Length: 333
Length: 276
Image (cartoon, rainbow over all chains, first blue to last red; front, side, top):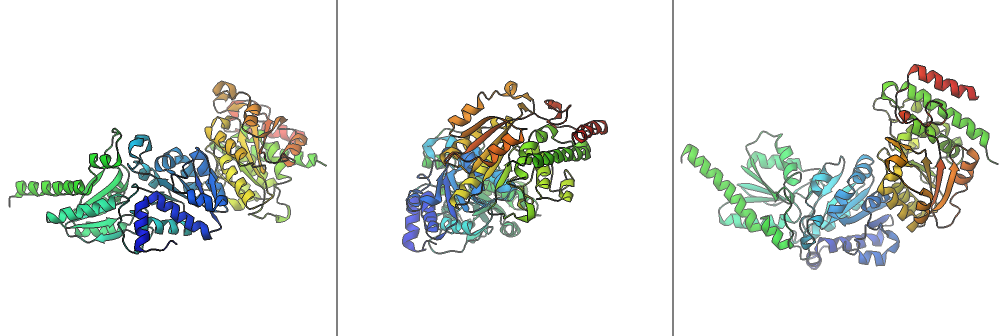
């Protein structure tokens, strides 16, 4: 595996998740004879230029034919461990039935890496935004769905994905200069969330790019005397039920934050399980609303959809305050 | 020498089993027409190159067949039985509750089923992956893919066709069951595919056009000797008759999927028994 040290962590942050994916796979290519990496005419964009240069025999370009790529990957996976990359929107939607059939039904050992998910494609516009991929991917029976928060967690998950025989979808978010969430070596496990900070009033469960924004949100909330726990839900499926149970036992609010439609993603996954528990915890959904809007830069879109740390904090504060007032109005103080 | 008599006998056994199993499926029905049209193709392959005489099968290194038109499943199951890959018990479990041999094939490598087909347009792309892996591993084994002519409506067939030529997969042999009918009617009325031979040729394939899909000698020569043009994948356009072998099913799309009554079953079996 790539060595984990402060310099590398900074490099990964600078390169963003795509560049880090390229480094990770190139590192695997050095020693793994059974590795095949595929792309659908987006290899350079997926950070694979060095991989292709160093290991041309381990790379297959399927051309702009995502459906064919996934089935080819499945066929190759009878002999190889195959990673297939393209933009998250095309990977998850254009080839959805191929994924259902080959990765879900037949359990082929293919790892699909959806790059540029969420809103990070900015001025490319809505065709290129990945706002439904979590919803679609987690509904495929047997598919593991990962959503790393930063470079270090991505490096670790790519290695774990290679070692595992399970079919997977790995969602990459953010752009270059991807903020650092983990500044030192941390243990990650597929199916297990990481608690980044403890809190007494509210738990923020976030995934991908929104983990860093939630850390910022928690520090804003701190100033308003709201103590927020932060949880990095890096595996969307299988979901870490224990941590949700723990939150619902102890806290009055759980907030889900994702750079994804509020329908079907992390928020829905948490709510589905939470609704089976006897609890008084209120869930606040933060994500992309259920409509297409005009295109904009990544920064602009995060502001428009109120997904920056400060806006997340504001929304949580408002919700809690509203409830408090309602409580005052009903019962007096 | 071409073992034509043996292959013909196997094809006849397969047709009898298709009628028997389809009848036993009762009201679940079966895809009779699509299974009967591929019988002679399947008999040719499973009595020769894909046969498992003396349990010689080596699962990593063998020739493989993908039935992309999954609704021809009875044509596959009966061939696997004749090829000594599955048992009579397996065969008789066709369309049994929670069984391994439902209406559309379910991947089961030990039973010789290489792919879960049923949704059309997937098998060729998968076959390209298998052929590419064989090339990389420097194996001599071939990959056969059976497509329907109606199935070629699917865009993914043509994505796969492009890629097979691009990767120079001369170990890949596609046999198209050109029975000229699809679920809703004649191909040319539903979606006219134009000149298939020139289409495949222009996609960079070595084409055997106008092969009689019920002529054992023609099938033997094209399938067993195919892959001869170095650097080119091979496609065999096999003209077939949907429902071939049973007079009332031939070219009659009512038998694309249908339930066989006792009366019809007796007529069908009578026709097959009269052959021998």
